[in-house]
Image: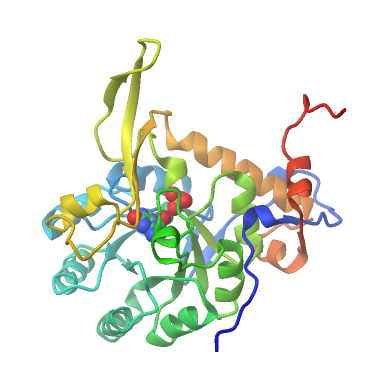
Length: 345
Ligand code: 5GP
């Protein structure tokens, strides 16, 4: 017989303010470690083909974050992309679990990469376990291994047991993801982070971050870092051409494509079309060009720094130790959104 538990996500909760003794939000440190690697900001750009190539990686590196290059290109192109990144300590590469992925890992590590992300849709699986074990045995502690995605304690524990240093958490919260409506599977992202972070490994909270508050809640819930896809879509640093179309008023709209890696479009481009026994678990969208991703990061980091002072925490670790969540009702949520003109009676 099945069990039934309760799952919460970002909008279901708020953080209760805690006494603050820090004079200015400029005085907090947002630095975090993943193994031996230190990052000034706890933000990672998603390894999607419309988000992270070398340009995004260079921006993330210059700001002290992490970028994971996507893997939807040949091994040679992947190595070239890696070589174009100036900040080698801030960039990782991604692999799946197929035959060629052993060669991809070998080529990237030979080129100097030290951060490897084993990334599949359902990370709590034998194939990921096998790949993580292989990498750990072959490269010992010379590389940082990120593995995912999972959404449960059991999944995180399984990948930790295989030898992963960092667990990537998120099944179905992404902005262009349709896994939950196609399969019924997933865990509301806040609960997923809380459960996975009971395992004594680093956590990257991947997917579903729509605003700075979501980032603060994800970190407070136990994530060391947050991964962003959709918030970066349409920015200058993402791969892909700027396209143009006419708006309803005849004006020219400049946009870029953004798509889930399991969307029909992505499967047609990278997996020789979509097999007839499959359904797409992602969507493709057009996003208006919105300038540099730097502005997105500044907004998120501003929210994180301010959030830290609301909890009197000068480090991300202190934020995690000090805060309490409060579960709220839809009325509580509405109260917290701008509502100046809402009249009653
Ligand atoms: P976002 O920041 O856009 O909310 O979420 C980005 C994350 O969504 C990615 O890092 C990845 O984990 C996930 N994702 C990307 N493409 C797909 C897809 O096609 N299907 C699913 N289920 N998840 C996806």
